[in-house]
Length: 475
Image (tube, rainbow, N blue to C red; front, side, top):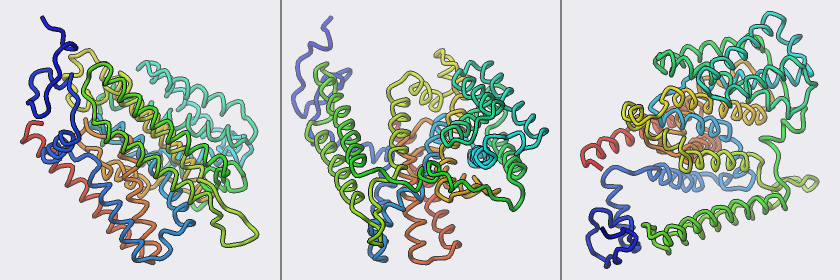
């Protein structure tokens, strides 16, 4: 039997049959032809969102002289960062064909605990009252037990750490408060995941019920009409409002562009050495050059002083950019380079087939809700920093809908099995541009809501039609 790796090269234009695709290198023309064929077959991915984003940027730049100003670009990056981070977590849930309607208010609970710990100097017992404090810690204990039953050890670790931070009563420290918020978010995810994956309750019902429950918890912690301010903390305020230094900004640019180039070109060369199919070298190099060029241009613009006052210097890449980039890279790595990520796509594609293949479907389904709620807590840190406070409306309906909308608009399928973490970032950028652009044009909130709803409806329609196209063509 002839070894596949020793087979003769395929001449350009020769039809690829059997396993020939594994040992051939496509030309640029072949790659373009294959891409067009995938588009016709319904595999459009993030293309509609990217085209829509470009169109919106062009439109608003023509209608407003302020839209492309340096100040507004920096504000735009921070404006939708919180919702984008929540959307990153929701992508994991959508990939298995589920939904988490409680992610918004779960982030609100995490934000409320963060703010209360800061305002009360770490003494949550006094801030919450003895009864609420006991119930709160009982919830953390329950979350740790449920995560242990499902063998989700990160969930156990975060829940136990949350108990320690709460009971020991460390003095107000922004890093402790941010860690506590993530612990609370992960604990909430453990409870949500257990009810859905282990008990077998529909995710829509469970998360809708918890949406209401966590909204009540926020009211209980903050009080109706109350506000917990955190802007007096330099670190907490800087999360969404601070900027890297000029040196730090360029260092981020080098790390981001260099890392992408190393991973992309390195993967391309490894596949060529192993005789596997690869994208044409010109296309790979073009992608690396385009992204690196974009990073350099954006960094160069953001390192210019954008303060209207000569007495104050405001420059540098906003802190939210590296935060989102870290989550983007980590999430992408998990989904594309780990067994766990491949299992997520397998469960989203066909749950019964995944179960028969030996995948622990129950554990995996529960774990994605832990990831989702933990990301929601990080999102809470960012949007609480942006407004400088936490109120009873934190993580309310708009936060949730915009987060889910960002994932769907970016190209993640509501039916499961298709999507990427990058979809959340692209969709978040679309929603941020819509909100920012209409705000600059002084459009009322009603118009913003209508346009946002129509954009989400359009994205859902495209998703349904593309999925139907895939089913018809059998791709």
